Amino acid sequence: MVANGDTLFKIQLNKLGTVHHSNNAHCTLSLKPMEQFNRYGVVELNADGSIRGFKEKQYYEAGYINGGVYALNAEKFLKEQLPAKFSFEQDYLEKLFTTRPMHGVVQDEYFIDIGIPEDYERAQKEIHA
Image (tube, rainbow, N blue to C red; front, side, top):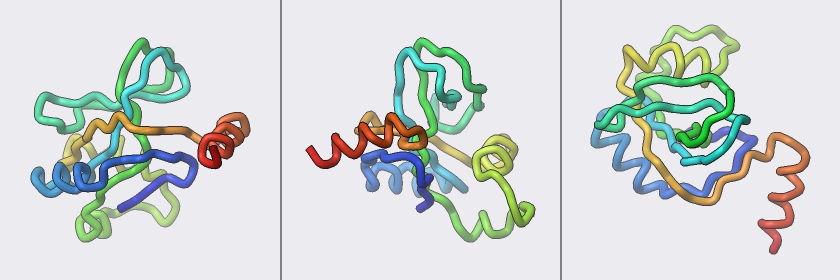
């Protein structure tokens, strides 16, 4: 499991694991459906749940965003020839999804990006409520 440190996403871990293992994926992303947003890029899926593409941040009426929680085949990942410093999203996911089996699983659960002060404060209130 890999999780971004700036998001809170209440996923169904068993669902993520099932999709990951049943597809023998190198990486499986937990995706959050969103509406009317411009703060995130979009992850596009094929009919079988494999990653079709990543779209840049801009306004979207609706789409799936990367929720920052992943099931990762560590053995396969450690064999990748990545630099000592790299971006998991840009250098691994976005560059290799066409040549590695990567899937997405939609999880319409509680999600908040705490990477900006306003949402961090909101999360503090919601969690302690």
